[in-house]
Figure 1 (tube, one colour):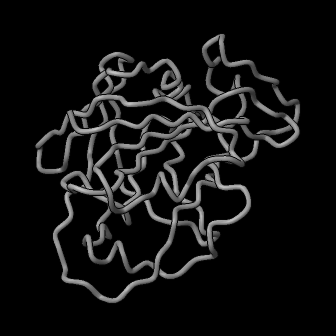
Figure 2 (cartoon, rainbow, N blue to C red):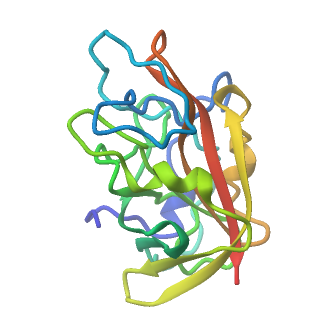
Length: 220
């Protein structure tokens, strides 16, 4: 985990960034064929142009706030989805200068949005996201996320070695322009785990996959 992991209080104090407007999405996963083919049911168009470096355009909801009481943070450190054979490390990520959520370049590593709820939170959504593929890397574990069925279990292992089990409530494909970002980045309400990656056909004209695949799970 990065040394700069903030307290729960500091996560509510990130600088005000441009409001969540326009296309809010996890966009620039690289094209099929970069590190291997995606499963057959995800149609794709392979671009003949050089692939851009992977970036994220998933924009978290940002709220200014007064200085609250400092509380300790318990970062997620591993994500396991037994039904899909997924067992991947998790690292903390923040916000790009553009206002987009950072993502690890390596699709085999998931990013935890450190300004949101942590592994010990009892309210709000723990946000984990990863690229489906990237230049010079194999296809990522979350390429299989679209096959996750309701009722399957997901385990999040925290930095202190404790783990929390979730049951999948829903799996939804959103076109990137319709992603309900404010809801997904909620910091209050019933606790949930949100897992996001890219999916759907690859658009060679934009260099992006069309959709986001979003799994929501609740504490079991």
